[in-house]
Image 1 (spheres, rainbow, N blue to C red):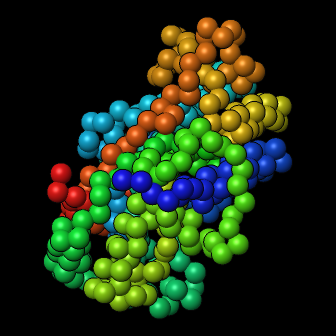
Image 2: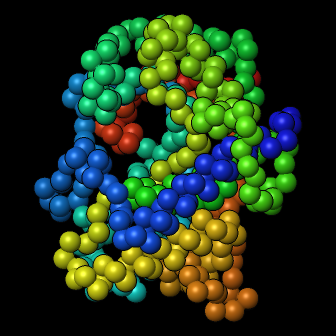
Length: 350
């Protein structure tokens, strides 16, 4: 199965821009730009940690590829999350005192639990508090029975009768975002391209933002899901949020350490800026093996690995997730920390 040449170009351009804006925010000392997220987080009483809020009413509804059940998915995403956890561990050790580093790890950084790992296919209805006022006023609650019995059944039957091939997503790289998100970026592994060709390509004149993933199999799946959702729920619900990228958010830096002095904060941001630039500029950034590093067993080589022999490939890079099914879900706590699966939808008769 070969897609059109350059099918991933739109995604790669978007990931370069994410890397550029993240490094720019760190360079300016304006990072993380997380004020929006802080307003929708709660503080856990026992340790002061920030956790995403729970939706008592109007939960979000969408279709996602859940990555916390398949052992192969868990292996790759655990490796990817450890890349970021080791990056932050090394930053703490180099720039902060042990006490301040521990405080920041507890109160400033959020890690996505395994059960929440997912790639968004499409959102039919987001919580109205996250929507602009005009959309909030027009929003209509979705009926539970309509979702589970009509939409879930139609998604299963349509994708059974006219199946989308099993989707292979290749880990393209890691990005530190301007809002503090720590994301793994994926492209379509079945695209007809040279995986090592990272040459900058200009966007075609007729390409718009909504076509970022248009020529990928995942983009095809998204259009199918939006079409089915629009037929059942109405076009306004299905098109409320149009997803374009293929990302997995593995953690978030929500705030910098509050008890650190100015010099420590500057050193921390400078260190992370050097890491972000390497991740952004070079998909094969060197990591240095270090048996003492917990939990991953490697450290990012910001200034280059001590020796060529000490270099190892960026962990997880170019490995593939094989997506065999997606799920219709209701999100009860933000960032999919608590969710209910209404229907599991196989992509092909494998």
